[in-house]
Image 1 (tube, rainbow, N blue to C red):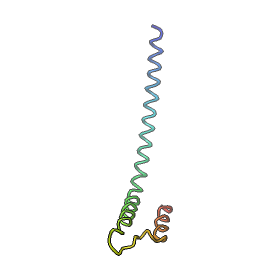
Image 2 (image 1 turned 30 degrees about the vertical axis):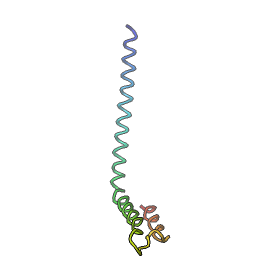
Image 3 (image 1 turned 120 degrees about the vertical axis):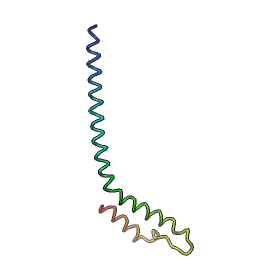
Image 4 (image 1 turned 180 degrees about the horizontal axis):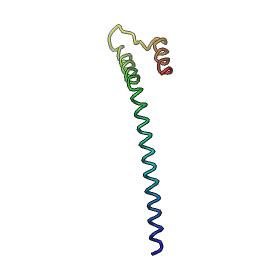
Length: 82
């Protein structure tokens, strides 16, 4: 049964690699959560602005704010600076 020790060594190596990969993944997820928390207010605000801007033409005699290039440019500048 000389091969049994070799098999256990391979299993231990695979287990170690999986544990290392999972701990690295956990660190990346933690970093992404911090970035997401930073940009949540900005992305939520932009979502609401775009949603309301696209729904505004449903009201009679209301022009959509995004029909003017200045509105689009201002939102692009805000996103670029953030």
